[in-house]
Each structure stands twice: as C-alpha cells, then as structure tokens.
Image (cartoon, rainbow, N blue to C red; front, side, top):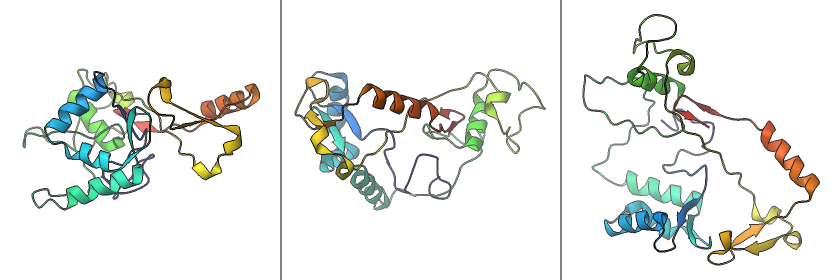
Length: 211
C-alpha cells in the first residue's frame, strides 16, 4: 500500500520499517525467541541475515538500526527478478476468483479492514442491507462482529545527543547481556507528568489493526 497510501505510524516507503521496537528479542540460548530465530537461520532466512548486518548493541537481544534494516530489506526484495512489486492499495477481496493470502499487518486501512470483516464475520450486519464488496461499510466496528484486533504501541525514538548523559546510567535489560541501554531516572513529578502525557497521547488504528 505504501507509499501510495501511508499509515499513521510509518514514515517511509521502505519494506520492513519497524515502528514498534527495533528489537528482535533475545539471543540467549534455549529461550523461545532464540529458538525461533535459530530455526530461521538454519533454513537461510534472508531477514535474519540482514538483521545481523544491521545489528546495534542491545545486551542479550538482537536489535537493528531501523533505517539501515528497512533500506537493506527493500533493496534485497526489489532486486529479485521473480518478485513483482505492486505499489497500490487493496480494498476488496474476491474469494471466488482465486486463492488469496491476506497479510495486511496491524496497520490495515479502513477499506480493507471492512472487507476482511465482511468476509470473516459470523453475524449479519447490525444495520443496513446485505454486505456488498463494491460498497463496504465505512465503520466495520459498528457493522460486523466479532472482529480481529491487534493492539500495540509505537515506540518513541529519542535522539542520543538530546540526552544529558550526566543524569543517566547504562545498564543491561533484565540484567542480561552487556550494559547497552541508557536508563533515564525520573523524579515523582517527572514520572507523573510523563504518565499524564501518555494518557493524553493520540491513538491511531482501524479495523483489524487497532493500536
């Protein structure tokens, strides 16, 4: 869909742009995240190879430089002659035409979310006429139930040179691995102000991708 139509979270047109966290979880052996990545590595996962190429210090976790990772993934996919890239928004699905895999992610547009709701709903529309793929309902939450939801948060990105290093300390996350994380202690007043700002923050999301 991007960049023809962007989302409320993405900033670029690159594939694999990480907007939640730049961490691909633990690299500690015998943990579930490590096992999954190890299985992917053994079958030659391109994404894990690129992630390793773009890795940044993150204690026991595999974390990546967001910009570099997205750039490399985009270059790798775009250079494959057997992959056709179509930059357009999908708004309808015809289950009778062909087998279709829908992998729209948690930031699905309103139109496609409505179409997915139409195809997966077990109930009749709560109002209006029968579902019509040519005119999907504008508010899937109000028209169909139950639905699929994905809740998550966007991680704020703080520029390192904006931090007063005399007031912070370095530590390992969960006391595992090397001390690569900047910890910014807060007073009670600062914490409460931060808490209030979070509650007042703008939230985005639609359809199956509410966030």
